[in-house]
Image (cartoon, rainbow, N blue to C red; front, side):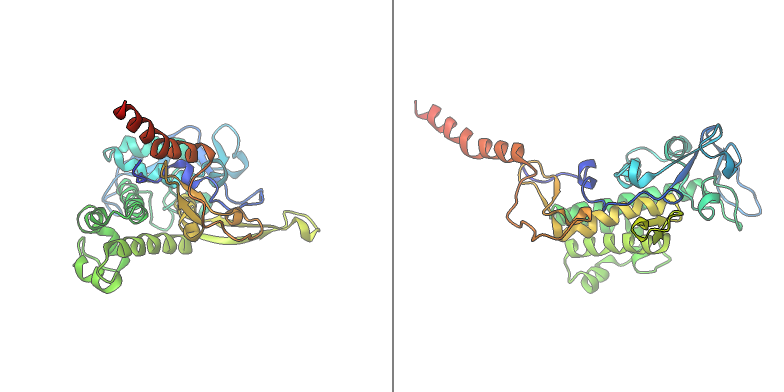
Length: 310
């Protein structure tokens, strides 16, 4: 095994801190009746926009027209699912399929109104905005994977050719392309792996800073022990990036399995437990991976050599 592979669903498992259940936060809405693509309005829009087929009435959530779910608890790899939409061609159907499964991204309005894609303050859930967010998430994931796997050429390709908008956002540029070479020299000491990690982590951090917040909720109790410390989000995009934040923030406490290449925590600190000294000598996900590695690198070569001598 080469030890190189993309970030996968199981990489997100175990990196999510314990979040005590809070009844009224961390929920997102899905319109049961589905979503539709609305034509652009000439006075305010250039592109079609996504909108729920039914208006939102909070008294009807979890009823016939709307249902609520908790993305942080039900889909630990939602960021990964969204970023992998880039494997499909951009289309209205791609966006509508996502909305039917998880709801809109919530870019059009604040929290509950963001569930619908309705026009709030002149903003809409534009289809072109959805496509841009897919590309952005895919770029973050690709750059992080390149750094994680020590793939220098891949990091250079993603920064230069595949996702130049990441660098544009990182450095506050308005152009589609930047002299990335100069940025790498300045911010990455000429090392594309440093630059890839810097760019991906900054995008994740800035998104979480703008869309997520810590919360304390007693949930109607008079007992201090019932206060629920958690994280909230203002839109679904924020929830997804919070998952990626937790994964990346565990960088000093995670390692890659020498056999399967999977990410695993070195200690239980990522789950909100006490802080034992991390096991820096751990090299495998579990006993099965350790045994497979031992067989293919120790036992099997001996068998092969024995057969060749006989």
